Length: 232
Image (cartoon, rainbow, N blue to C red; front, side, top):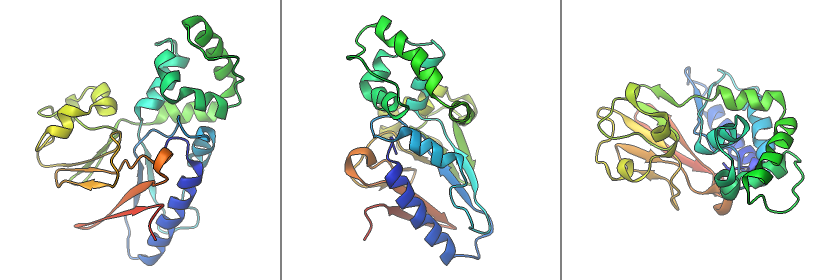
């Protein structure tokens, strides 16, 4: 969702309406695939919304799962001094800094300038937000479906997947005819114009931060249905 708190609110409303139409559902999960921050204008707003009950008043209640995206990993790497942050700042991190009210004095194009921003960001991110990022998990399985941010490395069992692949992989996973035998992989990370259901994998990343289309997948029994913020 990349900082699009406005779209998140719209889509949650549509999910709530769908849930209200199906009170017979007894086991409900709401699984977020990561990349909550960067690029859009309201990274802080997205996290603030996800810290609350996403669907208050809906019964039965949803189990909520929040996965870690590569952008959240990049933020944590910057704050924990595992990276100088220059790459992250160039592909969306600046918008996150501005969302948290960190003042920018010129573009941080050197490690020294980025280091100055690190301290400011550490002081600006609320403890609850930092705990949110650190609590995100790498994958989640429900029946025959495996949910990850980016994908999986073909031929490697889920238990042996490297975290970097789960958050960053593209070509090897996208080209594979069956990356995880016996499972359907639901992922984002790679933008497509419309959601894709290829049988063995389902991509719901429709580039919301630029397209205005934030998409979710509704699974009910054997039925698969997409909903988005641009549905009429």
